[in-house]
Amino acid sequence: MNRSYRLTNEDIIFLINEIVKDSLLKTKLKEKSCLNEDDLIELWDLCTDAVCLEFDENYEPTQKGLFIEDLIDKFYELGENYDPEKQYKK
Image (cartoon, rainbow, N blue to C red):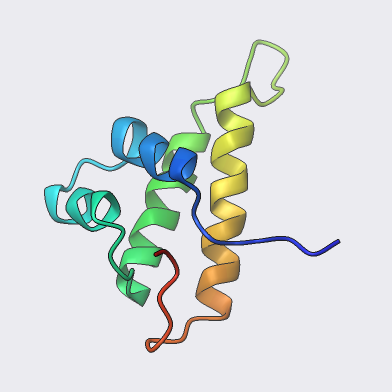
C-alpha cells in the first residue's frame, strides 16, 4: 500500500484547533508554509503529549486519539525523510 504522509486540510485544521498553541506555528500551518525539521519535532512532541489523554475507560484509544496517532506516524515519516529543499504542503 502506498501511503501519503502529506498533511491534509483536515490534519491542519485539527492541529490548529486542538493541538498547536504557538502562534508562529499556527501561522505556518494556516499559510501552508514549508515546515522545517524543528517544526516537525515540535508537532510530534505536542501530539505525543496530547495522545496520552485520549483513551477511554477500557484503555482503548478514542477516535480523537486514533487521529492523533496517525499524525504522529506522519510526523515521524516526514522527519525520517526530511529534505529542507522539499515542501511538504502546497
